[in-house]
Amino acid sequence: MTHFRTRAVHAGHKPDLKTGAHAMPIYQTSTFALGDFDRGARLFAGEEAGFIYSRINNPTVRALEEKLASLENSEDALCFSSGMAAISALCMTVLKPGDELAFIGPLYGGTEGFFLDTLERFNLVPIEAADEADLEQKITSKTKMVYIESPMNPNLRILDLTRVAAIAHQVGALAVTDNTFSTPYLTRPLEFGFDVVLHSMTKYLGGHGDAIGGAMCASAELCMGVRLEGLRHFGGSLGAQEAFLFLRGIKTLPLRMEAHCDGAEVVAKWLSTQKGISKLHYPGLENHPNHVLAKQQMQRFGGMIALELEGGIDAARAFLNNLELFVQAVSLGDVESLASHPASTTHQLLEPELRARQGVTDGLVRLSIGVEHPDDLISDLEKGLKAVHETLLVMR
Image (cartoon, rainbow, N blue to C red; front, side):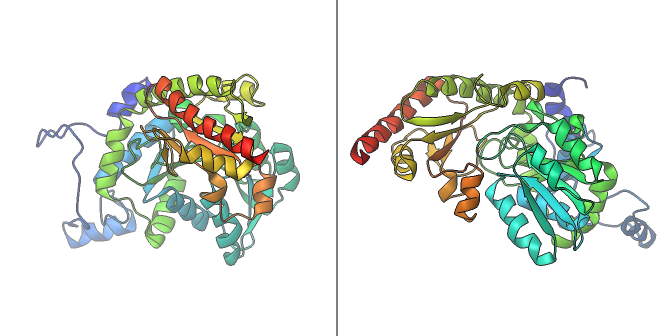
């Protein structure tokens, strides 16, 4: 299968010839019969492939893993109960006390909090870098992982994937990126030299806001290592029901991503003409500082937009509270459009100085453009901006 759209539908599963089932069955079972004593011993020793216990592997989940590996062009993939479960399982498998984990911020607030707070309890050293040049200056021989997002959450900066991977490999570090915002439909980081690609499948891969899950795509060896340690020991396993929902959602990923990108481009161009917005972050705009790089690394520019409102947090509150079509909620990538205020929600637990340094301002609002008609979304955003203008008049 050559084309992405075909693999999104067919990879990972073929109709069951015994039963005739067209859709992938949901293997709702905790354990699997070993057959006999000797086969059980071989399965647990890894000498024979097969299913043992759904915390470690499950046929429905395995079909999803094979589909993801096909879409990311990786040797293998591994699924988890959430994006954070994938991140933590990877880190706890490959890092040991004294190792450094270097990252370029901002990241999703939960990820950054895990790096800066939780990992330090295990004597792991987080190193924050401002950009690629700063990263190159700060990594050392103790750096065992370099972690980025591109586009970055929430301000949509684009990082040079080839350069970041090369910097990591200079010191023998694992190059890891969260590809949630782009999905493999827009960007495949392994093709730019990365070792590991992570996803919060909750977002675009699922696409309908009804399941939580995470994934990593990497070499077969690394996936097996994380399966047998990070997944088996920490237990962040994806359920068969959720795997079925993700399998279903991914079949329409290419179609949905085109609709997300179409809408975001129209909305972003309209926002670029409006008053009350001090900064507009969308890599598809020619005045975005990383526009050229985004064109080189992305098939299209994605469905996420960030805007900084004049008037700070008061303007953000007025804007969000006057939206009707946009749902005020965290997460992203749903068919419905969502809007959130990162500084008071997803990035709230980060120190204010860190948020300010990374550009997560009090006036920053993040929009996840759904698949609705952009004219209706613009009409809704007009209501929010009208409230911003009224707030600014009061403040002045």
